[in-house]
Image (cartoon, rainbow, N blue to C red; front, side, top):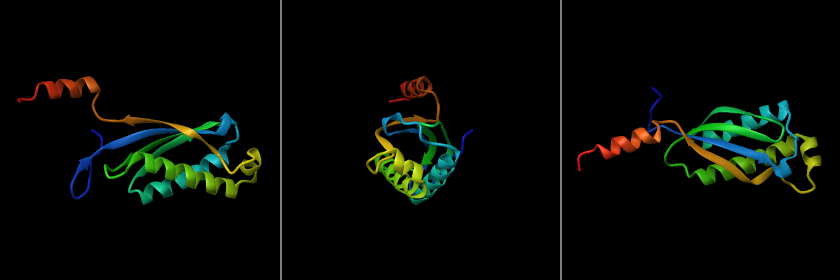
Amino acid sequence: MSEIYKNRHAAFNLHVHLVFITKYRKKVLGELHHECFSQCVAEVCKNFDAELKECNGEADHIHMLIQYPPTVQLSKLVNNLKSVTSRRMRGDFVDLRAAYSKPVLWSRSYFASSCGGAPLDIIKQYIQNQQG
């Protein structure tokens, strides 16, 4: 059974799978970049009362699994993650600054998918079987 998180007014188990891709899908990310990215994301998540559960990727994209409370607006979390990681990583790594003529690292688009819990068919069946 997965862990249930609690705050004053709710019990929850919310996870999101996020994928960020580099601008123009340039293959600019290496192992040191991934380590720095993971540290930055963990810090940003802490500010949102969220937690980075898993992080990995390749030279042109990064996958994350983040547990977050229901008070977090996902779009704000994503925007914060992108801006902080881009700014910090471009500041720490000269090669990332040189890869782009403008101060960018991430594409404007991203992938987000909800994760965890029971399969949708089970939830639909549970709701259908409730007494009205």
